[in-house]
Length: 358
Image 1: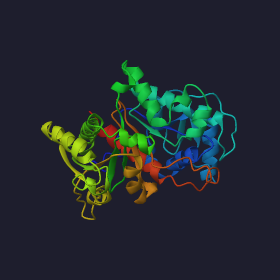
Image 2: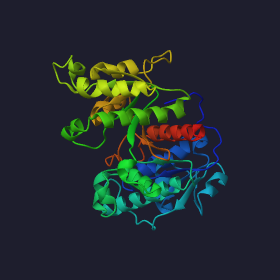
Image 3: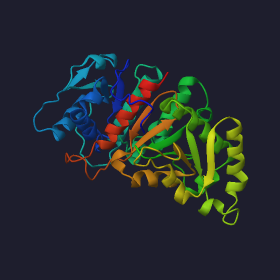
Image 4: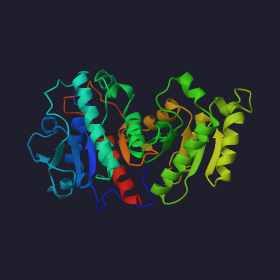
């Protein structure tokens, strides 16, 4: 997701915080590897978590300690850490040595506490952006209250942002955008069963998704985005033969959005619209983003193009949050072979968005 100017290595006024994700997964390892592979991108960044965990992770990815892990006392100190050093702010209790690749309630709690601290720091504007390594939803749930009420990162961030602004969660609508250099998709709903997701395709929810997408991408692109809307049914309903959601919900919704000045198009057949929105070799694309009606409709096209390049961006929050487009990969944890490409892309996008933000 490249904006109108590449600001990924521009100096930042406030630090960027990374959370290491589940301590038993690949999160700590890919964070450590990102420091080794992308020193320009990680300059001015720090990890909110456990110092011992990050030293253990750094030992996995380098045979000689060329990138020491240092403990800092405040977020602001990260801006002044010397190059080739991974700064960690100890924001959780000192972690025990947990087994790689295991689902553990202790790991879920440590991961949740780090995200909670980082989210609150972002809301206080102590950091410019938040980049989150993967959580394990089962471990998070096993950690108990308050983390067991959140299906994942997005819902936790949404609840904290609403609490910070003193509004109900319903008044803090968020959307998930999955993006890489070729394609952007934004989801009308996130973690719902397919049956519930189809019921969530309503006029108000789709219109809200369009508004959030338009506002967010205008900041990144420096112009109004051209947005395509995928249909719900095969062939976008084929004039009502295969379902009426396009006629009864999507078309009226798009008409309202156009009256508000949004550059929206569709609804289009879901099996072809993503190809039209994919960036061509000449850098052109028919659409800047596609609105997908449910989770898998939007995620499959982006992940098919390469999980290692995909980035998850939470839109609608009063903070910048990105994350890699993959999970904890417990089967790879602790082996020193995890690919940090998606995390590096997430960090690059966070820096771009932070530099472009007003």
